Image (cartoon, rainbow over all chains, first blue to last red; front, side, top):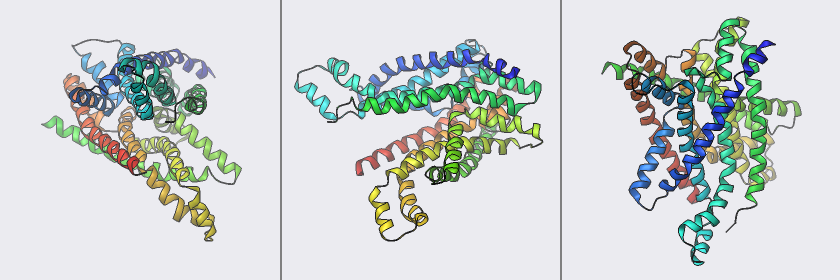
Length: 213
Length: 210
């Protein structure tokens, strides 16, 4: 049963990676979605292209580009830094699209009513459309957070000492892979479950607080 | 040009793994989606648990438990087979959710009409609900297939000779990781970005017609 203890050593790193990258993604996603919805077509297209490219290359490839690629002579990051940068930036691209789908999901009557009341663009976004779009986007954001929590395991490939790192190491040493990965898997399931449940009930409750026309 | 050729060899393996994973994942997803609505409680609970585990575990855990774990019980799967089974489970579990949503989106009247025409439960599913539900689920399924292609890069960790492992191997021998990894990234992007844009456009078109 020492596996339970050994793999638990990785939990703080798994959580750290998840929470910090998500915070970076949630923050950087906001200016990104503003650019994505810019009034200038060139900026819109350019931002869309950048978002698609960030999302279109697997995270593990980005991780290797930053850690091994840039690390060989350009900028040497620690494994943890490289993992946070990569997961943070890819999260920003995903979060921008999640915010955007929230804004698209809002009935156009909201924009029209705000304009009819003489609110300027910033005030409309801040007081009318922004808060409602966030409510639409929040369940998707929680779903993304859950995916990020699981995907943070790729960081083990560059040596971040999160859960899978210990699972891999213990399997190499003891050859009891089914038990070791079973325990790691149980940790992922147990910690992910509350988020999954939260996401479902959030969706129901928040939808009730969005205008229907 | 030799480098590109080697990377293309890896890309071929990535595509093969995508195909085999989908060949496991799509039937599994359909089976789970239908079985979750089963009248038998043990079957229902088993399928829910099977799907939740497949969705709740990182793909790396699924891959590695089959590749590194099973030899202990004297079952040795080749890297490709372990990757297919592992990601196939994960993909099937996700797809079952997508297909389930598609089946649920078929209007109730369709089932009622089919039942009124005297079709058996099995035939209602087979001729009425599944064909229409799959059509509704198609755009998100294609979108997910793109994610599966991305996910094959994780099979690098169990020594499947796919695109990333070729790139890493070349980097390790030349010590010029950056160039070759960027080349690999370009190959992924060249396939994934146009596919993602097409799926997005297809989804928007469908939405306009509903």
